[in-house]
Image (cartoon, rainbow, N blue to C red; front, side, top):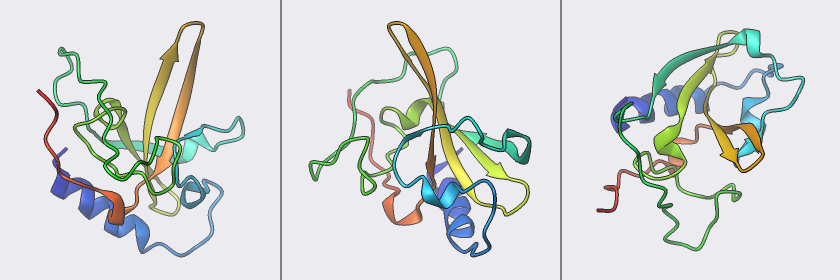
Length: 127
């Protein structure tokens, strides 16, 4: 998915005002997917994985000192963890979110973050 396509989905998602059980609009930072999340309402509409056979960078992009847990952290598609994310859309309300699975030592944790058009930045991956 291109950055322009991502921005288009983000703009449409931000325009949704109706309440929905998905509550995507409340996940402003990366959040563990809640146990009661309505998975049956979601569909995958794209991926930010550039090469399914390559190993994407683990470099993060935080020029203003944010962290992945910050609601104001930039959404940089070529940086971690966005470069491992899928783009999902709620089939009920139309909101979009980014999803990826954090895999650490002894656990896996599905995570979700709402797609905010103000935060999408098009910066190259580090060498």
